[in-house]
Length: 436
Image (cartoon, rainbow, N blue to C red; front, top):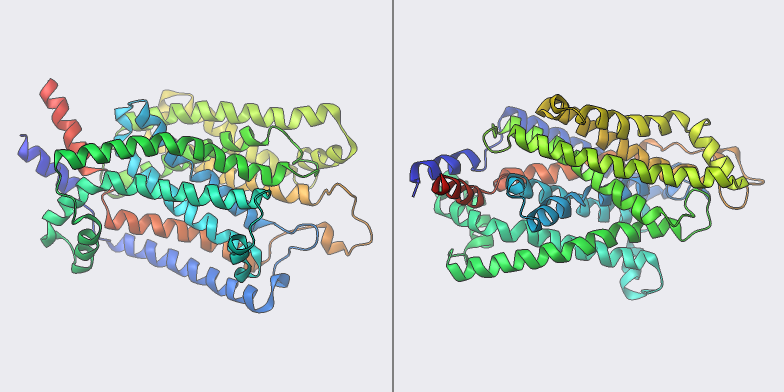
């Protein structure tokens, strides 16, 4: 039924080989990753002294990066789980992109934690000497669980497409054929297999939502269970979750635009998708803005002395420029663009998404660093360098290398697998024509 149309969809969505621009992009990412690996080698060899972290700022840019990766990974649960469970058919072309982002982000969230430890061999202590009362152990458990569920939500809907890829071996390289056979040789496309797969996906979609909420709540508890001004907040769980959904949606707008333009997917990722995702981003921006107001207004009203120093540093002090940049560029300007229909077209929506992602990264930096520089007990009799923090080149190189690594994973996944689900798209197009 509709054979020619099905063949056209398969041709349009089949994984594309890297062109010149793709090779340059991949080489550039590999180069940034290589610099990051060299910087990490220096850190391993000489110790954390190569960083600018000291007794007070003992986390710095690494934990900022970790929180950012965990946040952006929540796009998988939003697009794949929540929209699928609400039967939002329009989200079908976006689900695989969302899961690719989620999987790559979780991988590098885990890596950056090991980097931050300084002594990577001590990571094994979490398993050999676990302390169940520690939020750090909770974080390891929920991140591992979320990664496994995200991987399954990427893999299970891919099975029908693997059958298509295995049926067109002449279009693939021998290496890719081996991958496709290994991953999907058991899939025959029988009604029973489809029933089991659909049931499994439904269960995973239901499961991943509380896990997604838990992963960022537990991450927020790493901060909120201290007495430090700026972190001592019961609002932190909801504050982190709302911010995570916002940055994930912003990243989705960016990925939609890039894949749509580079792979000529205008017939599949349409302006209507940007319209709907733009509306979602506006809603999430308003929610996150509310929690930001709540997070700063309540301590500002009470004005305890430690909180006063922290808030003054953010609103009018050393970090004021960066703070207002995050508020305006990360929330206000994107919302102002996307509120209007013209702003929800691909190019302005892409610009708004870039703003959200950049603002979100620096927002995580602001969550970590200023608070550490305003400890519960005032700094006394310490070197001047302990009172300030700006990452060393090694820290920047490792942080940028991890970001490039996440983009590299997404790039390779997009080269190996169809970005837009082929089988689901064919089924939906056929259903539309049947009803017409």
